[in-house]
Amino acid sequence: MIEVKNLSVSIHKNKAVIPLLKDVSFSLGPGKTLGIIGESGSGKSLVTYALLGLLNRTADLAGNIAVCGCSNLLKAGRQEIRQLRRHKIGYVPQNPQGSLTPSRKIGAQLQEVIAVKTGLRANSVANYAAELLVKVGFSEPGQILRNFPHQLSGGMCQRVAVAMAIAGGPEIILADEPTSSLDLVSKNEIMTLLGKAQEECNFAMILVTHDLGLALQYCHTLAVFYSGRLVELGDTGEVCFHPRHPYTKNLFGCFFHEMKGREDTVFQVDPPVLYERLPGCRYFACCHESIPACELKEPAPTRLGSGQVACWLYDRGESQ
Image (cartoon, rainbow, N blue to C red):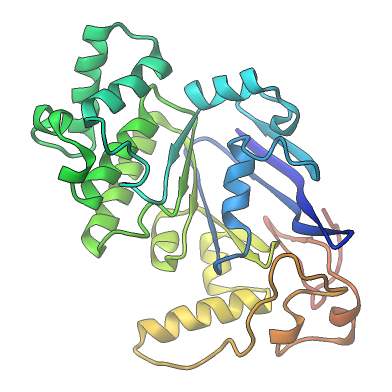
């Protein structure tokens, strides 16, 4: 379904080439959910933009993304990308209210998306729009279709965004921080809706989130990013309860300390910005398990079981 190999994104700064993402590789099959977690500025959303084809005009873009029959999305033309977005890939945005046009009614916006994705006629589009709203939890879809976005709460707008994303039965859903602006109840409602839709349509889903609780509850696999690098990848249970990379250990250490009501401080140094050039591991300045090699050369991903880790503490073995 999705196979990303050695995805790299770079920019030019002060006559130097600075990697924002470097050698990101993962795969995801139908009906499975990959959670992409990490701090703000770690490059999580860049992966989503690459999968949407939004970075294809970037000069320094390398690697391969095979998705929905397209052998390499990074080399695809505008028409092929447009067709993938219409019929194969659904997108749930971070800002539910900001993603909707404030001057147009919900019905007009939802029906436009349905018409483009399905090719249905006007009468069928209107009926399908009402069916989708019922599917995402609205008991009175007719009223919602007549409303403007500002007349709906953030959670209600996000339900509409989910309806737009699942219209037409996509093969992939990309959810970029879909619950970040919602309260706890709305968060769980939105994730439950996505989970039910996934069971029905069997689509693959990538969930970008800061919420480790949601990631642990809804994701089959976790990809941990730090400063533009995929530092660990594996089954959710393994990454959470048996983390290998020092950053992953500290990340979940903070999470479980907070769950227990403790206020231990684990991170003592701010992470480097994406465009800062460093010769070795980008977590070196924060790491309490570093060895001399960490400062001199950046580790390559090493396969460990069904996952991978980029850390000098582990035997290199078979690197990606």
